Image (cartoon, rainbow, N blue to C red; front, side, top):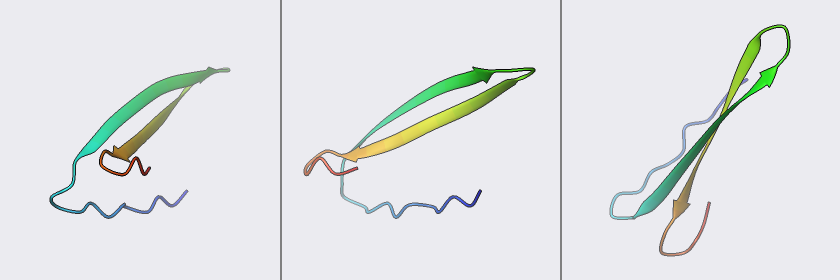
Length: 44
């Protein structure tokens, strides 16, 4: 999996949220979901 680093602009306000969950199989597989919301225009 190749994750691209996002562009973070200076002078903007972001609201960041994260969620951790796991898939219960023979071993626990943790999955992280993280997103940022640009506050002044509500853009993900």
